[in-house]
Image (cartoon, rainbow, N blue to C red; front, side, top):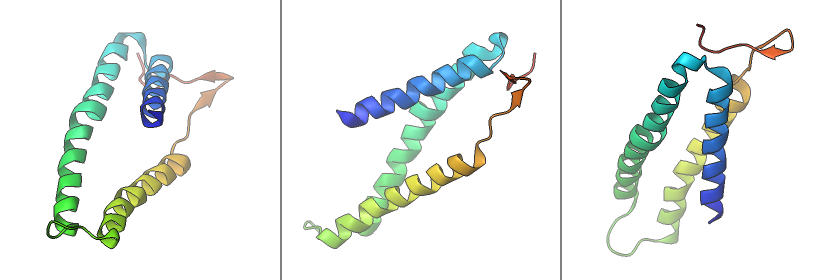
Length: 105
């Protein structure tokens, strides 16, 4: 249940960010693209990647604790890398006390 609330919070925050930073005539397209990337392509690639990792690490019918630790370490490492990239790479542009429009008219 906590994961659902965190995901919903991140999704809503992303939609609000798009709403505040994209020109009105492009807003619907930007929000649709975000949904496509996060729910369509993102979940599809995530499922395929997780299946590949699972099949590569697990062997036989009885998985060991080491196999499960290795399996869950890979997405953990990916999440840390993405978080660091976001923390150090995201710079919001400000102009005269107001936010700059990300997509110009």
